[in-house]
Length: 417
Image (cartoon, rainbow, N blue to C red; front, side, top):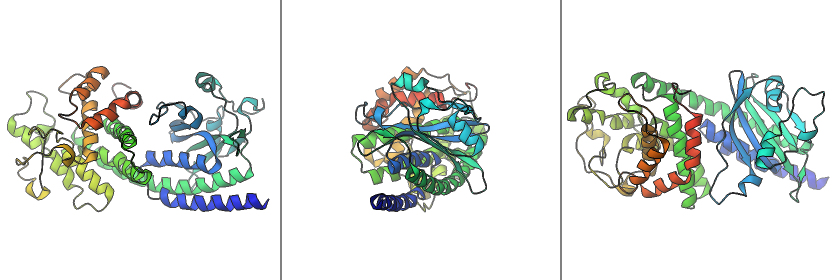
């Protein structure tokens, strides 16, 4: 008994330490993934999922499974999952979401017949897995608003055998979840502010749609994760960078709010040289929105907005080059000529977004062009490694090809959905 009490106290200290880290995460998706990871660690669970509420449905955001992960090559991830289901009592997560009550199930295959919820074995059969113990709880704000559902699967004992979630596990999960909700509330405030800024850009440029920026943001995160693995980046540095990148990448073209509609919405004929030079000014306008930078996120947002059109080989068709924001006069609009940036002079974040943005533009229809096929788009990116793009970024991009394709399906343009 004394040993168990000590372990509980030790775990609570661990939770307090993690709580401080959660409060520093600004992106909702990154935070949700981290909440799931840390909850599983606290109670030593093999798998789990985290879901968000969308109207009267629930959408999965992240799924994790250590058993399946060990079957993959180092650096690879489990398939990108994306599905929704009704918020009703027929499923375990639906029951928890609709009732607001947690559920602790010892064996998913032996749920009493009188319960309204059932467990579907289909996923287990497809993946050769055995789900047994499940602890599911709602993520609710103090006012009762439901933010999502957290589900932890297959508690493991000290020998790695599947066991049930005991009272200590329930206590630890509930305590951690309450802190996680506070961090989520803060992250949602940031998310809503980002969405308002992006909505403003979408009003000006129909190409800057929510699906486009979400795809570019999600691609960028996948590319960075693989690049970071390839380069053995320390975990603390990786966590800080990926959180900022997920948000900052959404602002890559926000500077288009300062471009005239006559140029911005022109379809045919294409730009004159003068118009093209004014269009290039969106990089400087976007960067000025974050000047002076007051945080790491501001700094990265400014770097991406300014330099995601610079070329790896330093070709002068890349822009705006080695420019100071004070050299750009928004009243003039056009970008003055400066020495091009090349190679690692271009910030890492901008080199990543360059690949993500061009790939998405190629593979989706625009008012001035038809969409390319997925394979043609991948081939174009690969063919431009070492010229337009950083070859190491392209390598990471190609290594996560399956996840890139899954993201495309998860965020279709409105006309495709």
